[in-house]
Length: 271
Ligand SMILES: Nc1ncnc2c1ncn2[C@@H]1O[C@H](COP(=O)(O)OP(=O)(O)OP(=O)(O)O)[C@@H](O)[C@H]1O
Image (cartoon, rainbow, N blue to C red; front, side):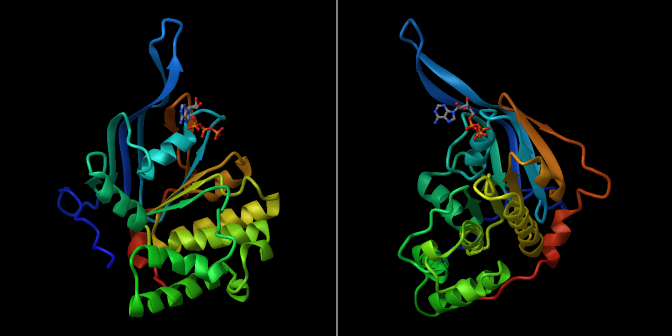
């Protein structure tokens, strides 16, 4: 059974907490020892504050080594920060025991990496259904998951390829399967780490547009890490990492919509 989301922590009456909120986040990685044999560390994140609302896309840019992947790893609850707070729908994640954190990852966070990492022996449809099976769906719920998987493949333009295995798909199609798979659990937060890096310009734009339309439709708070400046205008706003620090660029005119409105009006593929 998929447990119900944990209740958000107290918020002012009428105010809905952001889907994702990082506050004062530091992350230190161990980095060998210095000349005296003392342990050294690399500061990958340095006092990072980031709020991402439902139904909005934040582009995250910055030079190599600036901390973008580290930020995503912390937001995905894959890595615990050295200091600071990470909240999902107002719920503090940093102090949760590992099994509870794993449940949050499985049910409320979708992650899309550059390499789709699909299982070679499974069809596109089976890749999606497997995620529901892993979350414990059986019987009628598994049948419902098959329906949702078929709906998601249609959404990403792959209905006709549902029975194909990864080697029978193009790079762009594999990434579409990857995105559909990340949406299976109805995540609140969608984190994409350079999902277009292996694709040509046209395919990159298509994948970024797909992430934007999925964000609108499902009301996810989406963070898109990219090295491609051409994709930044597709996002609602842009944040730049430099030496572990985050700077939020001013929203362009007409952007920065209220994502919670999108979340309320988002349609859902029924399962
Ligand atoms: N597991 C790790 N152990 C030690 N240092 C790490 C580890 N992961 C990242 N770092 C260091 O932390 C800093 C931030 O790395 P990160 O991968 O987050 O940057 P990035 O902006 O995503 O880079 P890129 O664009 O090249 O992927 C870098 O100095 C990197 O060398």
